[in-house]
Image (cartoon, rainbow, N blue to C red; front, side, top):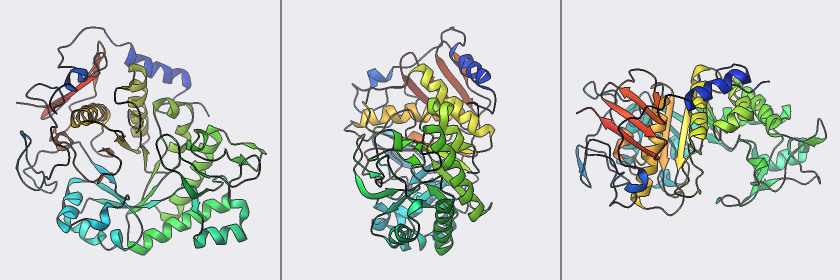
Length: 434
């Protein structure tokens, strides 16, 4: 299958990205660069009309001010609230739900459109109440993807009855997750052969069981990307049908078959979301195979940056153009996009704010206002339902058209504001109309 955006041949795809990159060089007025903002006292370096973020972790329970920035709590069910295209989601499975107050649960429900939680009573017993607070909220159950945990009943049963379901390296050894790229080792997480039809059906029934047991609205499937080829596992899986190592492309194709099995099991009424996009370049090369499956939405958990990357590692103009085209391709196929930006290193509030503004602005350049979602969090051990900065709730209204690109500066106009991103100075602003 040819690599493509918008389901077009590779040559036409190159033309799409080239059109973005070779736009007119006419200059536009611009705001202070991010590099200047990092020397400031906690703002994102924008003018007074731009969204600033001096204080992470805002309590948005009522109108007021935080750190000098004014905001108003926007109830999505309120007719008086300006419509906003910023749809937020949260990967809410890192331990914080178990200690969350009811007030915090309500805030999470009202300020988000998608929440992902683990199977079991902590989330399961809250689903009805979450829907009562926000009837449009999707609550998805977390699934580990192509892994089974050593020591569990599933692991023991499969190893005894279906050993071919497990992936093996070239030496015939089982494959587990090791510490890499700033993430911890998970030596009990054992890789499965996602090209095995029997495993595909087992995983589909595992997910269906968890949805039905607690009344989730669908599922999120983790670890579906090409991580097994980037040093995050103890080996590269061998495809027993060919006797050769899986490639990035064949692993993604196997993953697509697994997602098709899951979607067939849970049905059209349940939402299926998977991770694995990585970035626009890898989407062009091979992760598009996963997006070609019957999933309803796809996530990258490295939207514009790698979690443990340098704080100054901004995307190039080429990589940004490819990332934006990736989102447009997904939308053209009728699929939702989920962009997760992580700053999982030591960073000041100003640095966190600068990255959030930049990543959010890029998201808004291509957001369709209907099925695209955004998540920012820093550091890794934070409550991911937190609204870290006020501009995540900016009421921009509907987009008046697609973005424009002039002289390396992206711009998009909304009913109640504008978004600008400058690839020359690596700066961004999100402004409300005065």
